Image (cartoon, rainbow, N blue to C red; front, top):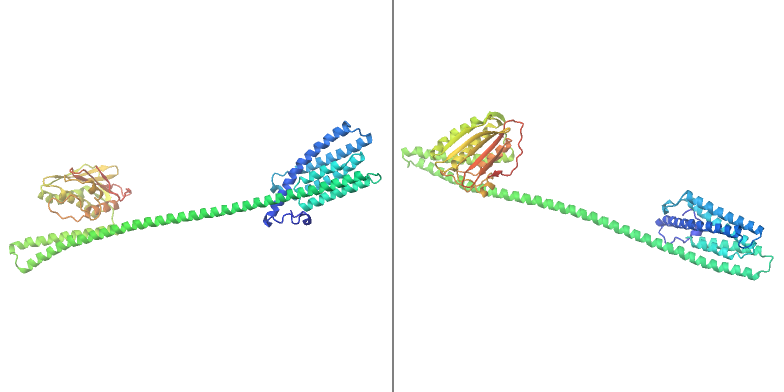
Length: 502
């Protein structure tokens, strides 16, 4: 501690790093104070036993004067030790961190009490014609058990030896006790030298132990810091790995999207090559016939009708492609108005009845709904029903029936279009509402199909807060179901998945 005279502490902590010296001296004081407390208790007990043995029982047969003198000595020593205990108890030490300048002052006061007490005890023993060397040795050994820096220990023990010699010389100067004095001098010097060496070794051993402990703590802290840094680096690597996985996942999704777009592009090129090139070639050939005057007058009307039919097929394909592109780009606007869906459905049934009769197919229409008012876009919903009823007629075998029903379910109007066609396989169901899809079923009357109709239907219905799905079993026909809200505030949550059930 800084309050110690530096001359007494010089080189005692030289091997301790500068930043640990304050803690080192706190531990030295803490350990010394704990040992002093125990030794003071032992001294108090010894003083009490001495009072009982020497003064109360007078075991050494002291004269009244000697008895009173020794009693006063023991009582004074007992009270001095008691005062030290009280001072230590006022600010008890529970750890080295509790050490204060107060405890340093108590430590020095204890050293003073021991030195003075030793001289008083030695004088009393000499006065009672005893040999004081034994009490002196006890006091010296008492000192040597403490953690005292070598120079400080040397100063204290030297002071005690010199005081002891002065006391012995002064008291025995009038007596011819050369051998007595010689024994005291030799014994005190020998014990002092031995205790100086042992005390110094005890202190230096503590210094080395403290230094190694702090070195281990610093190494442990360094390793802990490295571990923390490694953990932080590992966490950063994990985050980077997660980021890479996310990027890879995004790239995978983008690659999948690119593959799908490439497949759509190839499908589109196939459609352009097949569904547009062939009709255009046909129209060109028919037009050449009309210009060459090789067609008889009675057949010109038939050739003209063929040109119109082929042009309509090409127009339908181009319109479907444009509608699908606008839907996917979000550029198709829907104007929701309140209208009667039964009138629209009945109109579509009437429109396709003649085509159905050409294939001997009966379209049976029924309206079982209590309310058929819906909020939707009129042109879009008309295109939806046109597509569904057209498909039912297109894929139904000759002589079958098509059922068109209107029902109510909660806050929705349901329109069902059921045919008696070949039905859908599991593979067909998985691809039903996809783009450019060619299903296993084929039109039964040689009708044309672009493979885009159902995809457009699904996107339109969902854009109008409705939903569409298909219920079908292979060989038992198919039922396409559309539900549309009766209230414009109703929003139906939909997904991109095709909803199918058996």
